[in-house]
Length: 198
Image 1 (spheres, rainbow, N blue to C red):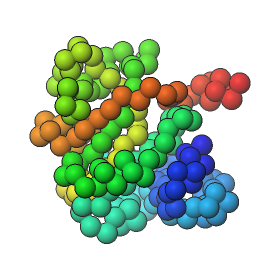
Image 2 (cartoon, rainbow, N blue to C red; image 1 turned 120 degrees about the vertical axis):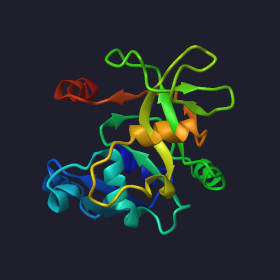
Image 3 (cartoon, helix red, strand yellow; image 1 turned 180 degrees about the vertical axis):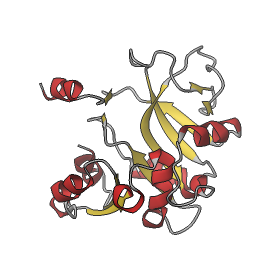
Image 4 (cartoon, rainbow, N blue to C red; image 1 turned 180 degrees about the horizontal axis):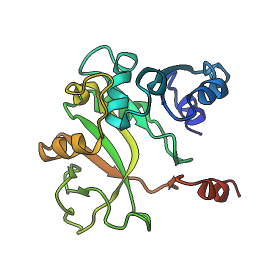
């Protein structure tokens, strides 16, 4: 789904982090040419014996994603279903002209995560430590634009979660966010995947 959407919206190069079922993923997706993409793989299982978590995976893949600390790229988890999301080129270009560390999309809290992750203030900045003026906290949709410099402190091959980086940057008012109103599902089990297919 993501590869089709990325190609539709004008992205031409994609980096896929792999660990679990690594060989099957590479065999199934190949070089990306069937979507008009070039796919590069960051093989965490082969190189490190397992997954490096989100920030660690991005840090390992950074040479494939960026040439400079100021470069920006899309981040999307493979297990979210967002059929209406647009990887908007103009929005990405606008973000690249800012000094922000990241721009996140937030969604209403699903039943399994009722407390949410982040608030959103009136100026569009993410809030790590409480709700926004609307009294709400929202769930991070696993969709973001990120700047390479956010991952500078992580050694390639180190395991590192994304959450602490986001919290630190939010406290410095370096992360903007917006609510996403389209269909969004976190596909966490085979049963959820089967329900989506139905």
